[in-house]
Image (cartoon, rainbow, N blue to C red; front, top):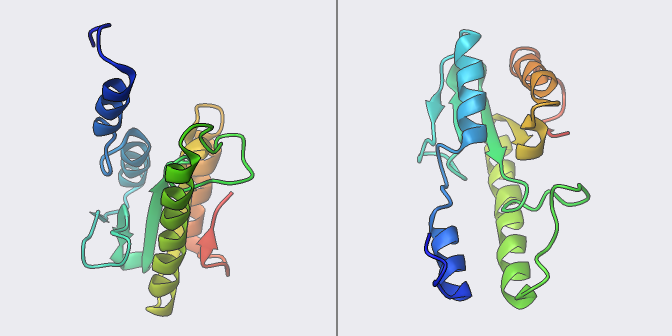
Length: 148
């Protein structure tokens, strides 16, 4: 990127590069599940929230959430931006609220919902989290929303 781009244009360019599907954390989770013999649908538009991974055989849906965009509050991986708070606070709050609404709709429809956070897939934590995810899918603990 050229050094003569104004800050506002640079931010706009950076934001345009952020993907909503096929992110690195999502691909990591999908490859792991596939390697364990699980088959799934990805980003299925038929369901609220367009879950990242749908496992019909296990009646389970997995959301792989970015800590910033989905407000992983109370964790060091999330901090509210210091600039333009009047823009970011409502936007991120609405993302969080929409997530909760979609998860509730899926629960009411009888789906088991698991949320995997981006920070849980860091190199030191990923093996433990992926193992826990596999257990959650196959054993289905009582909680419908499973998060760290």
